Image 1 (cartoon, rainbow, N blue to C red):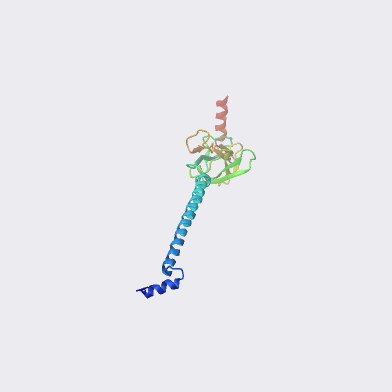
Image 2 (image 1 turned 90 degrees about the horizontal axis):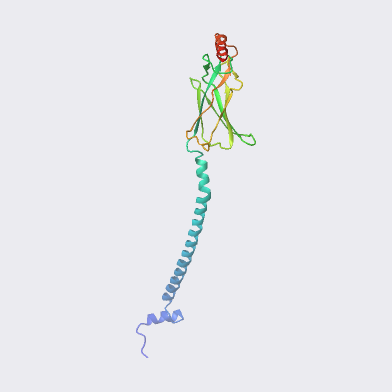
Length: 210
């Protein structure tokens, strides 16, 4: 038999012990493991995408609507408007001698319709004309809401007028009212002593009633 023309290659084959070059065997093993790694990586990636898709679907169905509702309680706030007067004739109602109180404190309160527990409260003050405007951002469909006088800055007109110290307001859009403005009846305080000219004025009212 003729000697191998490449003794170096022959020595490498003998060193491998199985008839294959050791370098080719190593490359084959690496390629095999790379194929397995690629296969399982794709499986894991696909499974991860499926789990993420389910999680996003659940988030969109249940969590997102609640977040949107909490972030935007109503389309626009309600504006509770009204005025606060001083009953200078102690008549129990507004007269031509009635004055209007600047800087009077007014509060809007809402109570649960069944338990009557207080669930909402917000204060405001009247301007120079005795008019107030309090913005309410929530819808209070299942509640009873009232505007009420709290404080008068006039030292001689600080007693809340009986029956005219609060006014009912409806703060929901479920009643067909399109406007966001809610106008409350005028509320007032009673002056400690009637001003001059009130006796004659009240007599005119009595004559008119008769």
